[in-house]
Length: 251
Image (cartoon, rainbow, N blue to C red; front, side, top):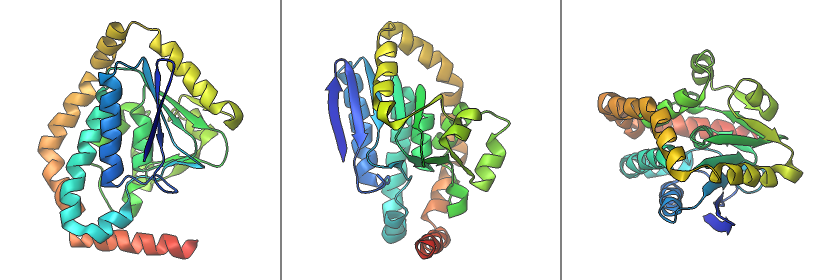
C-alpha cells in the first residue's frame, strides 16, 4: 500500500495501491501514519511518489458510492487528518507525481514544499466538481495556497486538467523532469533541502503556512458540517454513480 525505504537520510514513500492508488480510507490512514512516522524518525526530508503511470487518481469514488453514508462518516475525518499531516510535516516534503495527479491526487501534490511532475502523458487537475462533490475546507485551502489566485476559480469550476508542461507554465508544479531522470531529480531536490537547518526550515514553513492553516481551521468550523452532509447524501452518491458509469462507458 505504501512502499517505504530510506535513501541516505531521505524517507521515500511510494503509493502502491492498485492501478491508480485511489485514496480509500485504508490508503489515507496508511499515508498519514507514514508521514507521521517519517517526522518522528527525523528523516532529513520526505519524497512522496507513485507507481506506474498514475501518481494518484484521487478519492476512491467506488468505495464512496458502495459504502454510502457510513463509509463517508469515517472517511472524511480520516481525509482531513491526512491533509493536516501533509501540510504541517516539519521536514521538507518533495512530491514527485510520476503520472496523472487528479482531484485528491492533485491536492497531495499541492501540499508539497517542492512539486515535481514527470514529462509524458500525465495530467494534473482538480476535478471534484465534475464528480459532484465539494472540496473539504482543508483540501481547498491547500489548493488555494499552492495555486496562482488568478487561475483558481476557473480551474475549480471547470475541473480542467493540464499536461505536465502546461501545469508548470501556470505555476501548479515547480518542475517537470524526464522519466529516466525523474526520481534522481526528486531525490536530489530532497537531499538539498535536507541540508538546510531542520529547526530553521520547520520554523519558516510554519510561518509561511500559518495563514492557510488558520483558514483551514476557521472554514472547517464554518463549512465542515455542510460539506460532510453533502458527501453523505444519497443525491451525491447517485451523482457519483452516474459519473462512474459515464467514465466506464467512455473506456
